[in-house]
Length: 352
Image 1 (cartoon, rainbow, N blue to C red):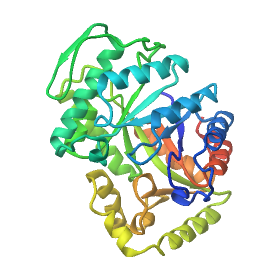
Image 2 (cartoon, rainbow, N blue to C red):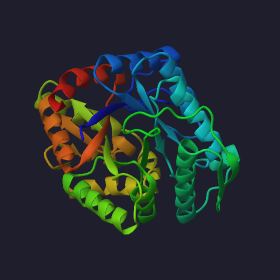
Image 3 (cartoon, one colour):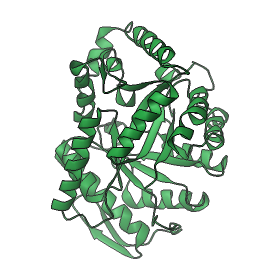
């Protein structure tokens, strides 16, 4: 299977995300649309639109960007606790129909400020059980009519989602991405996800996780097509290897100036995030160019580890992940508009 390359849309209320220049219009429709249109022009298939309470609603942002573009595919992050399955299935099907089948979905099951929108926060096991039931029901609502479901977390009676999701060859409905590193998360991915997203871990770790998930899929009797795999990682690309490392290390020095308390507060976190933080104990640079220092000074999520180097360096590393079975890549660096152009021109041609 050929690889697909997406970027990241900084769906943030506060400016300055991960070094993005601070501006009053950082999340205006014009600013975000400029990025989505530039992604189309520079060879990207779409971009992840992140979610979380206190951030702009992802489906609304994705709808606006789809209306401003022709081929851009939003990877819309959503949370089961925030959405009810039938309501979400209908909203996503509507956007998919209006956009000509361009929607992708990233299911996020991690903790959020659930009380702020009137939801309870179940423990981990129950949260992932709810997520699995949510995904199974949404998939049925997209592919069946007159759905009746009586589950532990959700109930629907004689439910038919309209408009129907437009089907394409090899795509019966929007692709469902999912992340998580705990055993409970891996069971969900192996059972019901289409794509398991990893953060930037070393090649050997990714190889181990892919093999474990494939074996788990077999043990659980997965009934869907084989699970696919994706990588969400920061890619710091400059014209030369030396320039890339100089800029990366300078940025880490700036990050280190933040208060230690701010960094420490991020350490009490999910299993997948802790895995990334722990990589720094194995070395500052792993494999050829996986930089772990950002995680020591406050980098989180996809900003915890960076692939650093020239276009050839980074493309070589991404190809090695592809050789392991990664077919979906979600890359990013700041400033977002400048870097999506640079990497679209300098990195993507080396990967196709």
